[in-house]
Image (cartoon, rainbow, N blue to C red):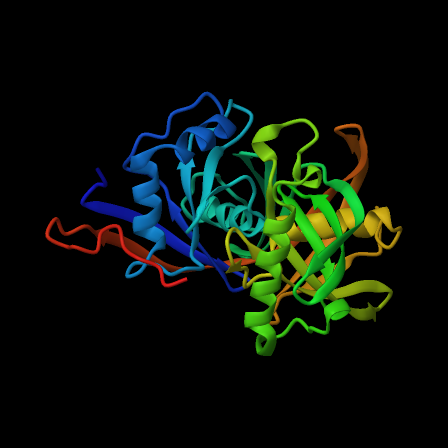
Length: 339
């Protein structure tokens, strides 16, 4: 059963919504956040709460959010289960940025008026950091420092309805298929919105059960989460400049440049020698024109591969606080989606 009232605080990060549920009114058991996600995937009550907050008339097909849960241990401030209309995801960079702002706004984590503070968060893919920067008592930027990210496979030849494409699969807390949109005659702009969604879905499902969608060490992280369709915009002041649209889950579109997707792009670009520790950086735009800045914090190794520790800088803004009401006579509970 879903509670008759659910309280949330909503943010957007570079245009992408993030609905935070500080006190989820359903049981979300598990020893770790990764375990809680696996159990939530099969929990009727967790599914109905997710759908209630994501589906119309209380949400929409591209809604995103998270349930705040206990951290794995005392080394983190909180844990989170990320969700969207199709399920529970393993990573979410824009949500991590929003959670950093929320943790300071709600005084869960004390922050200085000037300077920065680290908000440490356990997510299904591991432990991440939202470094919250403050100026004159206001949060002005957040650095999302992610788990080690790396390339899984390069130049996978894939036949699609738009011809053969070359796909690179990389990991940034979730597995992404990377494709140059211009290689199939598309540009990353709203006029091609429908075509980009169709191609992104097609590529994701074509690769999702392949050997390239297997995480090398943790099967809970396997599966292609999304397709990143990118477009080169040339060099800006010596830095890499790209625009992308990330089509994730089953046809959902990230309005931001995608936080974990930016990490997956940084892994590819580092492998190509185009970004590195101490620069150059990635100036990453979204389909709506918002921007993240991606940098490499360190070179490392993970799961037997060369890897990087990526950092994505952006900002989240509070859009509202809500008390959602569940009327027992309402026939449209938990709701519906039209896509």
